[in-house]
Length: 354
Length: 98
Ligand SMILES: [Zn+2]
Image (cartoon, rainbow over all chains, first blue to last red; front, top):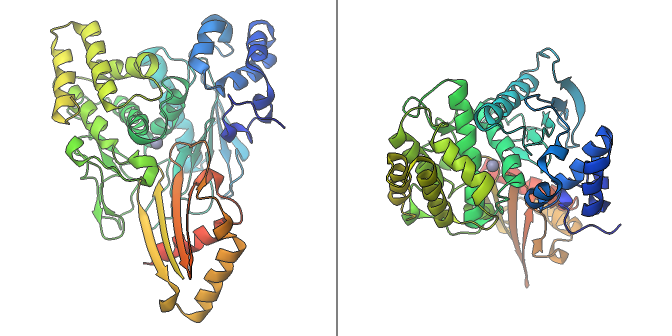
């Protein structure tokens, strides 16, 4: 079967139909179809690389399948296998199951939905009420969590080095934000755009945790994955946005490789060009900007970064582009000579990007 | 035969590496490794197995030198061929045990 070049091959196993539905046809179904047909066509459009542009053409109103503010969470259990999504174990409104991963995935995706809706009036990952599907107990002793293009997936961890990957709400926020990025800036997952993609996930993951705990920038720990490492590991978390490179230093895991500024940027090929390594640089820029502004980090710094992610950045944007863009947005929102604009400028200067 | 293995990426972004020289392996393990390399058709695999990268998936790079053969394969977790998976698991197990 010929594969439409707009489609992401990774979605094939979730929705084989989406990759044979031509874009103009799915647009028509969104405009004129019934709700089931719309849902189906939306799935196709979400798989399209031109999502942001096509959404504008079809028009926001016609996209609304789900009611704004209403979450649609489903949790699946892979039973230590690798078939996705797995067996459905909890739907929206169902009571807790008693399986801690199922319930953490449910609560964490709920907190993430609420964050984006309450703070930015964003209705789910695609901004049009997309379902939030999560699979837990993926694979055996799987030391990872990921976003596969249409859902979140969490491993149990090996128990030696890593605990379960639902343990920290910022990990759940991180994975869902990958979905937001995919539908907005579409930052390619390689090199500096990839590190920005990673950083956006850490930024909003951390903000979701901070809002859940009602913490100001000063009170927050700015850690990613706190609680994920077992007691046997010398480390507090996987990454520190405040002090990249200091999250762990362990005989088995090694030392946290994140650079805190451009002088130590990683230039190797591993990790798609160090997307989880160099994210330390924009992560720290966000921390510095938010701290200089003070108060709740999601109110001002978070808003600036959100506008950059959803309106201004493009798939190939690098650190410098992100720096200039966020400085510009700060000026637009708070004034050309505002403290907020200066805070963003100072932050990117401190990490050596501008 | 020399095998150099690296797993990078994943949510944690850890870089796990190991290298194995069959000159220092017990005969049974050497046999096992040779069998895994053969059934993966390792030297027939492309250097770069293309895939749309999925956020936070692992990335593998494996290099094998055997006599006059020398080959490196880079592949993302989501597109690992079934035939290659046992060799990657074997290397990962080696890396874990140090
Ligand atoms: Zn990520």
